[in-house]
Amino acid sequence: MLTAAVATGLALSLATTALAAPVGTLKQFKVPTTNSEPRAITNGSDGNRWLTEGTDFTNAPPKIARITPAGAVTEIPVDCNGCILTDIIQGPDNVLYLTSNDPFLGGYNWQTGTFLAPITIPNSGAVAGDLAVHGNEIWFTDFNNDSLWRYNISSGQFTQFPVPEPGDVIVDSSGGVWFTADLDGSVDRLNPATGAVQAFPVPDGLSPRQITIATDGQIWFTSRFTPQGVGRLNPATGVVTTFLTPSNPGPEGIDASPNGTVWFAQNAAGNIANINNAGVITETKAIKGSQPLQITVAANGDPWFTMLAADKIGAFLLR
Image (cartoon, rainbow, N blue to C red):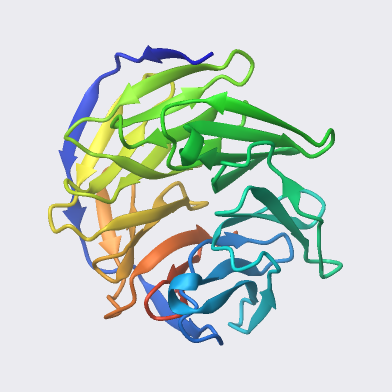
């Protein structure tokens, strides 16, 4: 049973301040397959970045790919009968987990170079979306069933949690599960022990889309559709602070940096941007026709991102 509560925290709306571009070097690396439309990207425990690519819409077969810090790309076909891969994330024991529009959870062991047998989700209508990892648990969204799912690697058991339609999911250090509920205009927290959901409404009409947790434990999210912007939720107080981006740059994927700031992709602007707790945004050079989509920040603080329309991976090497 879904038990919902609405948090009554303070909502703040602050203007963003744009400064000069961050100091660094922008690198671009071409993905070998034409029209592959790279989408999700994550840090691998092997020190490389891993991504998904391929879509029926462009007749590009589904693949995952590894890109080294030097930019060498290796593509690996995924045997999923023409599925569209959704997300990829590093799990325990060198296994990368991946989702698609088919009702299974996939896995690839980068050390052995082998795929796990597909793990069937116990609901044929499930559409596995964005992923999160917490210990030996794999979490993923399922907008088709208005649910979050938890897969316990040790037991092999799935647990379904009915929630408002989820967009993205992240798990904090205490095991609290946070997700965006864009149709409700809120960021919500699921208590896995009780199934209770607490909603934190987002002001200014923003529709939370992608989500991450900064090093100080605060929850950050992007809002892709007008009004556009970036927001921050303080879990301790329930205060939601929004930073509007009136130029409509198309905020998409978001990830935390080791220095306490966060980076996010700007799909319409063709670049990536960094925001700090004061709401100061710095943007990299725009790449025309690139459509940055998802982003991950390496352990050294360098952001890496997919460029959907350019069939490229970008990296901003900080100095």
